[in-house]
Structure formats: C-alpha cells, structure tokens
Image (cartoon, rainbow, N blue to C red; front, top):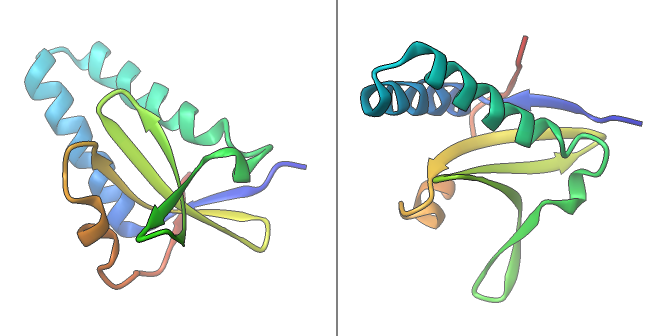
Length: 111
C-alpha cells in the first residue's frame, strides 16, 4: 500500500528555489522541468517503502528524519501515520542539521 506524501510550505519554497537555481544554470525550461520532475519522482519512489530512505542521525541519535539524495540536493522527510511529510529540500553542501532544527510548519499536499 502506497503512503501519501505531503510537502510543507517550506519544502515547496525550497522546490521553487531549486527550480530557479537549475534554470539560472541551464537557461533552458525543458532541462529545468525535467530536473524538477526527476527530483519529485525520486521522492515519490519511496511511497511503497518510506523507511527505505537513508535515516538521518545526529550525535549518534536518530533525528526522526529520512532523506533522499538527488544529484546536488537532499529531500528530508518524516514518516508518520502512513504519510511521508517532506519538510525540506536542501542543497547537499548546506548546514542541513541547523536548517532542520528550525520550527516545523504545517504541511500541505502536493497536487
């Protein structure tokens, strides 16, 4: 049974930022669209087995987050009540632990 996926408003803003960064680098709408679709496909591929994402540990403790790697970006999600909550989509070389400790916002479903 596939779980549902909900993206937080912050994750959706992150996705917009990724789209802008890819477009700035490529100057091509088709490349940008394919990149974003491939990123979303990578996240959605975890629907059948959400706990198969890489668990995120900090100071030897599980943070409650899993992550998916897609090229230069990491998508961080939690799994609760048969739902994947994607909270952030961040550049792989950023300070992800500091960013993830920020207060959580409500989530919304991707259409």
